[in-house]
Length: 195
Ligand SMILES: Cc1cc2nc3c(=O)[nH]c(=O)nc-3n(C[C@H](O)[C@H](O)[C@H](O)COP(=O)(O)O)c2cc1C
Image 1 (cartoon, rainbow, N blue to C red):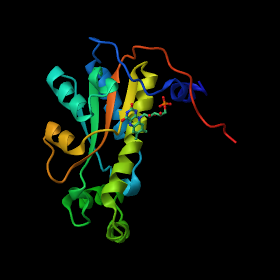
Image 2: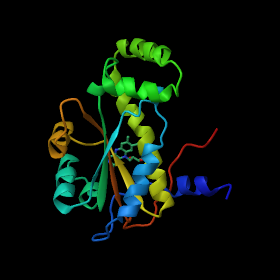
Image 3: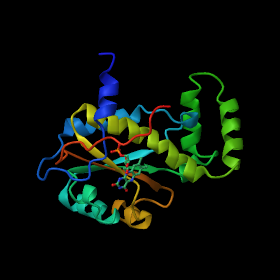
């Protein structure tokens, strides 16, 4: 029990080939999204949207935008995490609503002012994409816990992905997560020693 989470962490690896014709269930996909939804984010802004694609035509479009990498062409489903960069403007309704929720009945003005100053520092798109990696990590570990394979894919053509997903101008793709049942046993884990 004490090691349950660490076991899932140890089981996860980047799967580059998934078993053909073995879809994920709707329940599995819902659990993965729920794990992502609960991820932490800077200022509690949750700067993400999850797009699930499991149909053959949708998967082919995403795989192509990922340069037809094997993990993408064989995936049974994708969850693409996109970040609403435009909505992160300090004056947006999105930001106001998030801070009202985050303040839990207290005055949201101080956190809003702190965020405005942070936003003025620039680099908000890169910051928001970084936040999405927390949601991604939750999903990858939830997938491992469910016995599913996964591969985070940052190697994509952003313009092609925007077109495949018909994203609006204000949204930017952050990460593609390929999912399925892995076709091969886990490779040896390569990591630096703890010290
Ligand atoms: C942000 C990010 C982007 C990645 N992009 C790709 C990718 O485009 N294609 C790929 O095959 N693996 C990709 N990976 C997987 C890494 O190559 C892999 O996690 C790393 O080599 C460590 O191996 P492991 O996950 O099996 O432990 C990505 C991983 C992360 C965290």
